[in-house]
Length: 322
Image 1 (cartoon, rainbow, N blue to C red):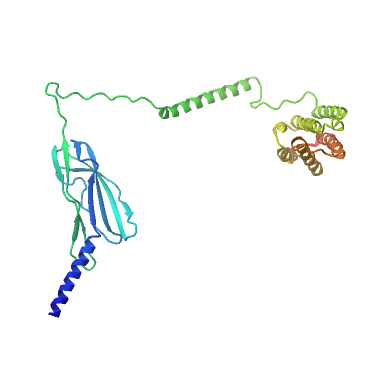
Image 2 (image 1 turned 180 degrees about the horizontal axis):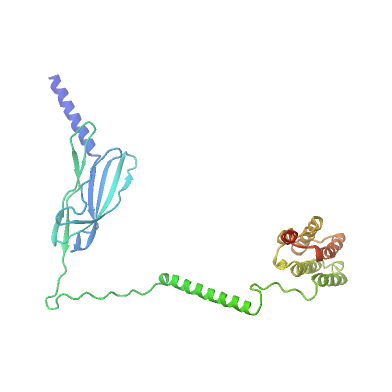
């Protein structure tokens, strides 16, 4: 009696284990639409849920499912883990069509698997689906119409944009070519050189500095106007003598540009100091002392006198030495 009970318990345990294992395998199928015209296409979605570490053999659906349903395309596998389990969902889409009309059946599709140390093949199947294939009705009086010509779709801006850009590029090239030819024909440089002042830069600068000195601006309490004119004279001198856009530069940019020139380091440091004081006076409304005002004007004279001949680009000097 005891042996019979043990046998029954074992049988029940095996059945429960098999049922639990079978629950891990699920196959599902669905259609985008179950009504299509003859020859039209729809998508058959296949989904298999299985343990992550198991191998399952999918049904062979290459070319066709049965004699009435053709398979046009098969998508790549899309594998998605099932949160909180060791299961995964594998999704595959089949593009299908049919040339029969009426109600057709998509049969259950079998997925075959086996347990470890057990050669018995098990399977799980998708549910059976129905799909209706409709045909086009033809009016007997009108008959079948001829194929209509292709309707030309209007151009979009995105389609026209590449052509527009190429046309603009061609116009730019033509304009540049004409400009180069015109300059060459008239013996002019392709890139216009900076115009040289009729009067040497240092003479203009000294003349303006003398006038600034005579106006006695800072002596009359107008330090802001004094430093504004002083730096304008200095910037104009740089543009005429050294040919860079000092009028549009800030102090740091001017110092950076001057560092490329053969200018005495002490003079360069003094230049930086005076320009900084000027910035403070113009923008922070700081009132410099008398000695600083005198030093600023003396510096301007010194800078003009020192650089009127000696200021040469380092690159130009090295090229001349070679």
